[in-house]
Length: 173
Image (cartoon, rainbow, N blue to C red; front, side, top):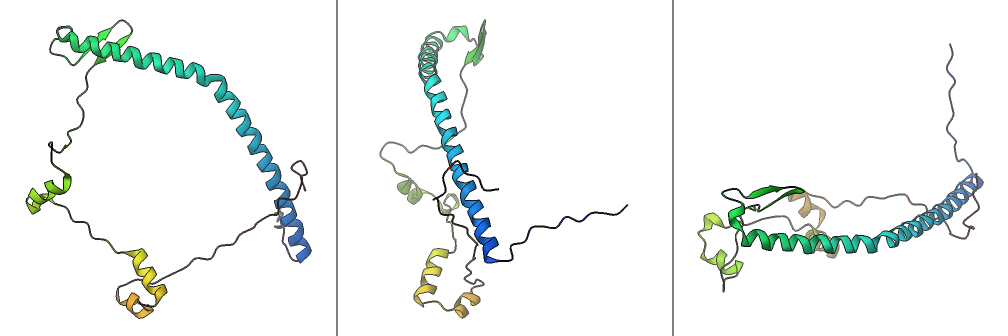
């Protein structure tokens, strides 16, 4: 059984490049039109439901607050537990993760000054942006950068910018 090799299309002339870019421009226009239609339909769907969603969300928030007030006023309902099971669900209190908060009149800078050095972190990192700026100004040359174990590189990327003059409905095949 012999295999059939499919050849990939090749752009070999300027006319081929013009045709390919024309197709990209037409497809881009169509794509942008479809995205606009999608955005319009999503906006319409949001507007249809957001009123109900807001009302329900506020109701849930309000009733949750009332349940919290009730739970705080009736600790005997919980016994030694942090939560209780009711007919339609469970409610209770969760203990969060431990965290540090400054005392009244204290700032984190003041705390750092009062701490033993074992509890103070110092983060060192290379000033990459500063090094690039110094290289551009001429303050650091390639040899200086090599001595520090780095070099300045710039990537080059290919781009296609279609002119958006094609009508949105026309698709070039």
